[in-house]
Amino acid sequence: MSSLILLLSLGSIMVYSASISIAEQTTGNAFYFISRHIVHVILGLGLMVLVMHMRIRQWEAAGPFLLLTGIILLVLVVVPGIGVSINGSSRWLRLGIFNVQPSEFVKLAMVVYVAGYLVRHQEKLKLFVPGILMIGLVVAIVGVLLLQEPDLGTVAVISITVLTMMFLAGVRFWHFMAIVFAGAGSMVALTLISPYRMNRVTGFLDPWADPFDAGFQLVQALIAFGRGEWFGVGLGASIQKLSYLPAAHTDFLFAVFAEEFGLLGILLVIVLFGVLVTRALIIARSAEESGQLYAARLVQGIAVWLGAQAMINMGVNMGVLPTKGLTLPFMSYGGSSILSSSIAVGLLLMVERELRTRTWRRR
Image 1 (spheres, rainbow, N blue to C red):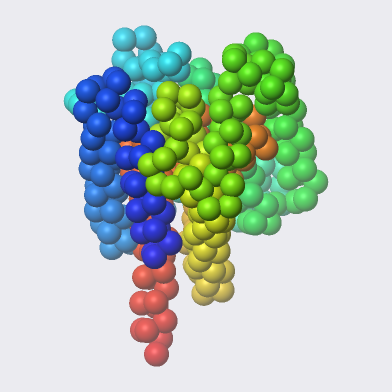
Image 2: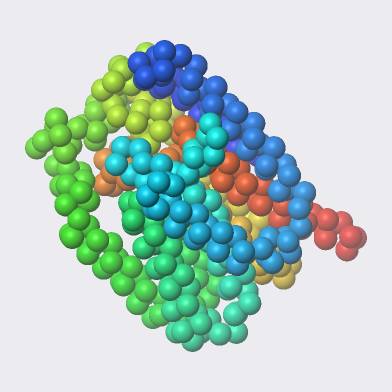
């Protein structure tokens, strides 16, 4: 819980620092983005507390409904006139003064649903069709809808999360490897047939070959990391956020953070995510040891989801991975990301609370 509060606090500070320039340019109000961010953080904490006091069996029963709702929302996003398009991507639905990004909640829905599926079909996981193929079809349907937006980053996060959940649930190793190779091949094929994605890959492999076009974003991010050195240039003193680095307060917030807080700040964020994921895995182990298989699979999925998304975002910022439109959980500006991630932590705390209650009753 303390690691979550620290991540949210650092994120709020950095959203304000990274968004001042663009907020003044686009809205005339330097507090535009940070004020909305704070509202979402407060709502997220409220949802976290609410979910924390719910029952595990309620979420287990709601899994199929949540997934179906998520799929319907993904369909609505790509319907002309309903979905909101920003920077060439149709990923949002407008609800009053707020835009909702369904893909963020679909990650949560997939974890909740797959955890239940793995428990319901535990005896059949050694077989290919119920153990691998059926879940693979669900991931494929969601993936096709996400690619219409397009949002390959979310497809990658969901695929990694679901595959890891299946592996931990005990599917056959050869079945697992078959789906891994199939998924990797699909990712390569999707990249090769899309000039947009291919351009990102070539820009990633050699960003300095075209530093003013294909490699511009990565070059500016690397400059930010270089300027940060050991201790950073100081809070608010970033140069890259001044219209040099695109998406400075969203996808590339970590680069601005690295510039202002340096290597020590980077290590702090990595440690905080490490503590959060480790704590989640400890809860999952306790749940499995006590016979609460659904709770264990649910927490494992959440741990992998949050950890994988954080690693991918940081890897993209550091030039280790090709550019993808993924936020840094709990830190980047993005209301849907904050809310879905907060609900996920609420589920972790819910499982921990029920485990403590069961232990106390046994005594």
